[in-house]
Length: 180
Image (cartoon, rainbow, N blue to C red; front, side, top):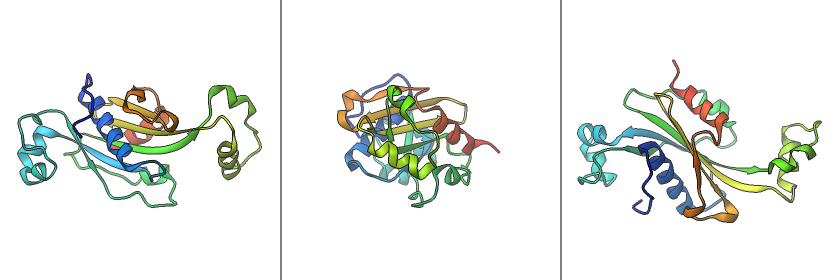
């Protein structure tokens, strides 16, 4: 994933790397979960795996390496699935990429209050101002967080928004996977 732009922190670089990977798969993809491991430790402790991942040169001596996990079960609510996860000590952090429909703040006043979850989902899907967005959110054991948002209508690496507080609820759910 050599086209990933340089970013200030290893966590931001990892989020952008995952966003770039997800963009190569196209849209309308299931959610994907990643373990984040310290690249130097991975190279030292699992050299064969590091070689398979292309981490065998001097360029990959620091930072975080995302390792995609098994597919998230279809039809299972994401929050329920995340509640079942426990990471081994070697995992420094985790990340999730997921696609959702979002409405601009200007549409919030229009949302009917009497809809159940399925009806609300349909209502948002039919709204003329809806936006399809891919969110990549990562957290570290130490509490650091980072997110990347890519709108389908602006599907370009130069249009990806990053920030630590863009998707706070998803970041909280991921952070909970590290709690005992």
